[in-house]
Length: 113
Length: 113
Image 1 (cartoon, each protein chain N blue to C red):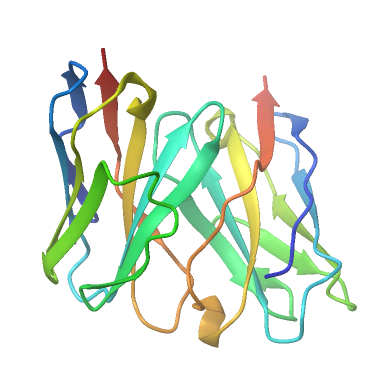
Image 2 (image 1 turned 180 degrees about the vertical axis):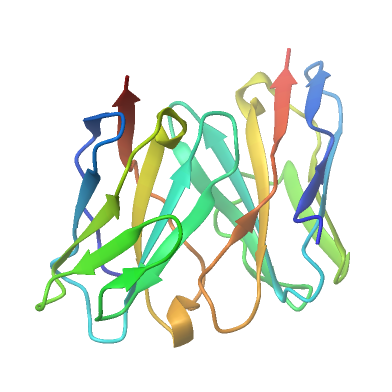
């Protein structure tokens, strides 16, 4: 599986957009990019995933570069409840379903008032 | 759907005692995962099942740990005998075929004294 690199921590002002980067320079053509987050003391929560095209849902947007070597998760209007650890994971297989998900250290996002 | 259900939410036990953690996956999901999370090691995959069959148990720390899935709606993770270093939050997660979207339970916080 492709390895991912994320900054260990980031701050964001409440109400502003939070842009969380992820580097996955060794990603292969059939691997998906998945994002999860973990709010303190809770289980990880799925946010969004994508293969090539940019994706948007009610929680966030995912921007994948044309060469697919990096991506950015965007929380358009961060709130205090978005304070969490955000994990970027790359997975192969149909829909990114191959095997299991391995969680790295992620990015700790702190949203400040 | 009630989501992934884990029990107990909290367990405090003494070293040497047997611990059994339980998980009910989301109905219709074919895959079930057991993860362990500590401050030092982060989120680690212990074992996962597909259609009730263990697929990869390479993350199980040692013979003191065992996991079973007797049917599609129930799994257990057993530690016998327990040790203080087993103290952690244990998460169960499930997903369906053809997707990498995992649904996590709220976790079982284990403290071994």
